[in-house]
Length: 526
Image 1 (cartoon, one colour):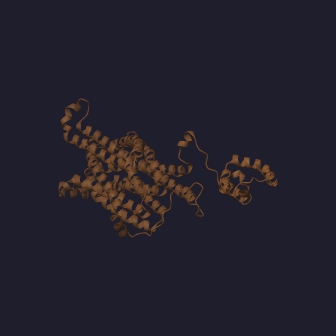
Image 2: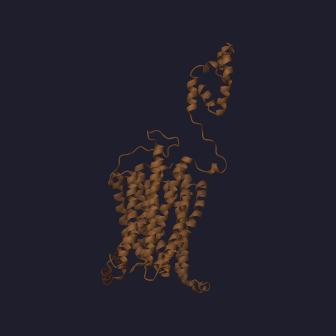
Image 3: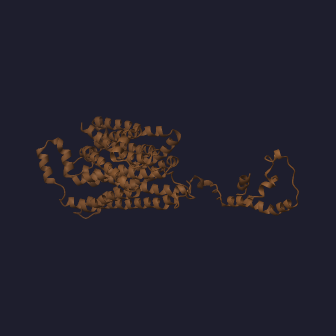
């Protein structure tokens, strides 16, 4: 009853009424008049007819009631649609991080293809060899190194170390490595020419990879940006600071906001790639464009680090509380009991014994194989249509912008799918899209010449039709991946403990993606 009284006096209106009635209550107590109630009915008597219960400990109870903060007022109208303030403080920086990471990812993805496909002595046929014999060993080596660093470094220091290494290389490539290559240094062109003359034609791809080794290294690190920075660093951090309920609400929106970056970065790549038309004669237009692109990557990386530091310093520390107590804004995510770190061998055995991790790895590997089979064939057609690096890069910029627009539309559809049918249906859409569009693209490649007379009437050739259909296939499949496949995969990591999240994601996203690409490349070579 005392607790009910204190609860009744929490609101300002009830407290004011109590103060106004205080003189009358004092006079009533002094009169000596008491209502006579049966002892059995005291518990059911109205609260106002039980004065003996209020004579003691009332001041302490009232003080305790006054110390309890009032609940936040109910929001109405458009404000009721906004997330709570404590959620916005972490959701907005995470969305900014994802925007900048995908902005860089688009630039690096387009640039690595231009460098490798249009390099001297190279072609799109070098991509399967790179994915099998360069990306796969590189991914395994990085995972071993990352697991070792994770046992020795704090999570924040590990994040800064890995991200700054990527940014340092990309900045050096644009301003130092590529100018040296353009000056005739670094690449063993003469040695590669001797090998090409002495070896059969089947060795053209490995010779091109060795001849253009700086481009191959750029391809490796640019490809790892997607698996390491996007999947491992960002999503690993996001899964740590968000709850399952928040992930269901905001993960699709992360993609919706961040894929605006695809539109902006695609237009930026397209604009920079066309600057060669306004440069003086004799100036390497692609070299100037490369400097601008890599500078944008480094600047965007600085924003990523700033947002990450803000989350750790201004949000996470406040949520944890300086004295170990939770702050008024609430805890970001429940802390899990820290487990002792496992060695690399123990981690590998633990992950291999987990059916949950193996299932996630199977999803990633099969997706990589399916998309690689179509993508390499399309890029070989693309080089035939756009042999100049600047023209190739400009087309890829437009392709990235179209991917961003399609992904935004798929994000809206993805929220409806998650809410209406749940995780299982959302996870099945991407494989279905890959199957349908892939079959249509290969059917066109096999029978394209049959429609040559009809296509000539509308100003198209079978080659350009294959380029456009392949672009549409890649746009739709990537939109389905970004809007549905990736959020489904990241939600599956949330129930895991810290050890499985860190090393399981490293094994699945970094190593798992490489066998998928390598498997697709090997199937294409066969």
